[in-house]
Image (cartoon, rainbow, N blue to C red):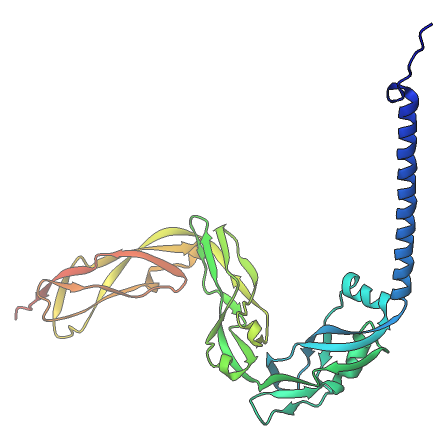
Length: 337
């Protein structure tokens, strides 16, 4: 009988043993990894439960300067606060919960003049209570730095300037602005540092464009303050406008020409009348009469051929399109004795 030789590498038993060993290695590694993570976590908890000292920075915002003064420049806008607190709190502040700026109310804080340079200063100790009230660590502050905060205050002045409304209005065909535009206010009072106020002569409104307008317009436009960052304030923030709009129609009037400056002479004009073309609002159409117009020549003896015609009187509520003629010929009449 022949003996059979068994190759373990080709048998299923060999592969099963290899897979079992790999599984044991993976299990051991997983257990090790879990234990490592737990150890690190416990170490982290222990470390973060201890007290630490750290410097935390806060941005400062200054409000309510002394009466009739404004802040024109800030030299120290960041303050550093030394804190004693648990590691958890400090980590939360550093990575999870960013602090808001601290607002410093200057109304009840001594503001000193700087003798060595232009400007003012306040002592950091004077704002300690305000920092504590707004900090996440009100009872854990050791000290603050710098000990002196520098800024610049200037006395304010006031000045009245014109308000210019920026309007691009296009009425509907045969419609026009009727009369005058009512604007309120016409002027605005500016308050701010003299170096800025003295250079301002007017304030514009926000621009507006209106097209195909056929009715009266009641507008409220915000005033633009390009000097806001320079601490300039306006007494009002908007301007109101009333723009009357009416439909117009065209009409004509024939007016006799009057003669001035020829009292000792009798003149014959060619022609003797002038025709005026004008636009009038429909509601005023019936009000118009020819005696509301006046056309005249101021006789010039040096004008040999003709005399210039001027339309010297007409109703204020109409719009003159044209009139003809602009000049007339004339004859000087001589009386025969």
